[in-house]
Image (cartoon, rainbow, N blue to C red; front, side, top):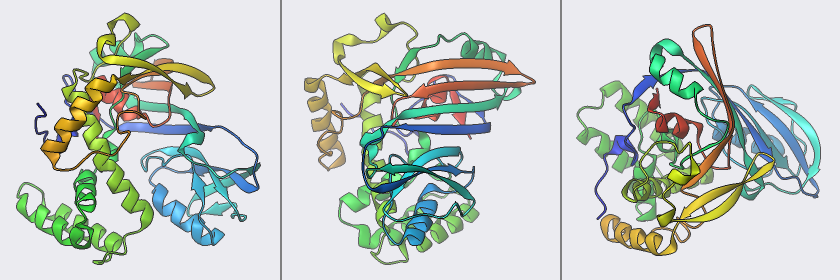
Length: 338
């Protein structure tokens, strides 16, 4: 039976969690190249720059829609690819663009995964966590929960907004948000005002919702359902350093790219997926999107893992398949990123 999950848990409960701030957070995207007549650029986005806002500026500069393989975290120094029919400037909005050559338009299918490099203060996470991080093998597996930034790090309401859109209440979305925050007395008033302002700017108090933001909040609701199903299916947060510990009785094997290598992943068995989809439908009052559990693996490997402790900080480098989150790895280790 599906149990209701609190808004702030995203469907996840971390084991003995500690909070930490990332000193550095770098993500580098890997893609499949293919022939085409679009201009392909390698983009550097500095930390603090919103990817959706940057893409909007690139489209205005290009006077046409640009294509990408994946959205990158605002909190990361990100290196990713953009394909445009028209030429783009070398610098825009703090981002730098490097022309690579010609390519076909990009889509999530082009994404071969990401390499991450991040660092944290050892004093914040504690010696025990540091020892555990540095004893992990080069390759291990983890449940593939969506990361908390998928739902909004400042106030996790993206999936709430997405559900309203799927219920065809998007015309009243801003008013819904306003009434929602007024009901939550424990939310500080300055944050309420900030969220109202964000909703007003994004939504303009009318149904002209920007398409990328519309897609983002809608998909975040499906992400919430995915996390909810994983938490109910006997796949709690944690890691599998040995493959024999993976609960194969409820999983089917699949494969995915992790950088330049094809790796083994796992999906929920079809009969179990159908069971949980049915429970979600009766619990949420919405039929989940087709393929919710077919396209995304529920367990993925973390590859080329390296851990180094130096000068009071721990530095982690690793690769994950497309769509997997570095913050989910930390959450699986009991570290919640502030």
